[in-house]
Image 1: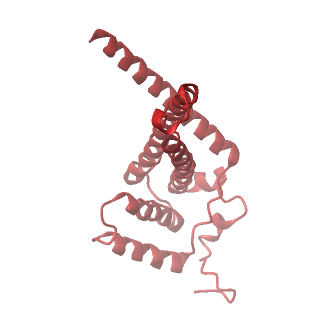
Image 2: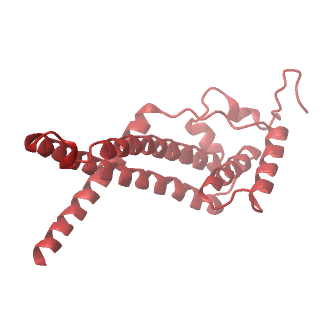
Image 3: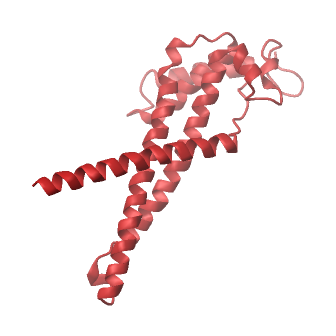
Length: 200
């Protein structure tokens, strides 16, 4: 079924491989494609927040604030304050990553309730399922390699999904929203902790 240029897209799938790869027209045709697009966006935002969290974690580990490692009382106080601020920022980043991952998991949880209306939609749903295999204990156990095999077969027959290209504006908005939610949570937890400490 492949053309001479090595593409393997069947005529009824060509419509979703145009320039407007993540456009609303494609998602209106098949809700499974909209689900896949939202999942990709959520995963991308969580990846960015994960990287930020790792950088902040490294900074917290470098700025321990341990007085024995500093040259004087003033320097130890400054390092301690910097470590405290870095720790707070790290806590927010960690929670923001959790919010982003939770959003991606909600898209995965919606897979059974969304009907695919095309081969592209079926491929999108399987792509999400196979993409979740890194969140499980052993992706080499049944049925994960078998599902991945079915997905490869479908892509060989019907064509692959377009390469996901994240929208910067949407990504920034998602990251900012998760960051703000995480900041509120960390602040609330900190206030609760201080209230509980004062009661003891």
